[in-house]
Amino acid sequence: MKNHPKINFGKNGVLLVNLGTPDTTGWWDIRKYLKEFLSDRRVIEVNPIIWQIILNLFILNLRPSKTAKAYKEIWMKNENMSPLRYYTLMQSKKLSEKIKNEKIIVDFAMRYGNPSIKSKMKKLHQEGCENIIVLPLYPQYAAATTATVCDEVYR
Image (cartoon, rainbow, N blue to C red; front, top):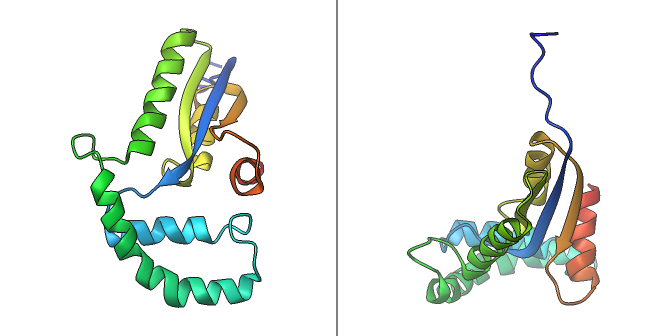
């Protein structure tokens, strides 16, 4: 079948996953990030109906400004990203360089924000990864950390 598109296969992916970060220090990006993070039932374990009211009426209207101020203090201006995103990116690059194997693709994702786990798993699959090892970058197992990464991977 000479008209059939090339099918990538035979590779393995390694996906490093960290907590997440807003895309910018802008109010809307911080609000979007906080909404995703604070809407996770593993992070906030209270009655979801009451929590959504508190979150949407109060927290998402008041907290982004304070959070933006804090992010602006640590934001890496030359790289135009948060330190967490920068160092997670660097970890994935260094691990890839250390492995030096064309059959192993190392990448990173964020549990909340971008790049998303879903988008990176899709990308790895398109690049021919038949197996993907997901490595949450947390020092311990907890429902609000490693478990929520697993939830997102399974989705």
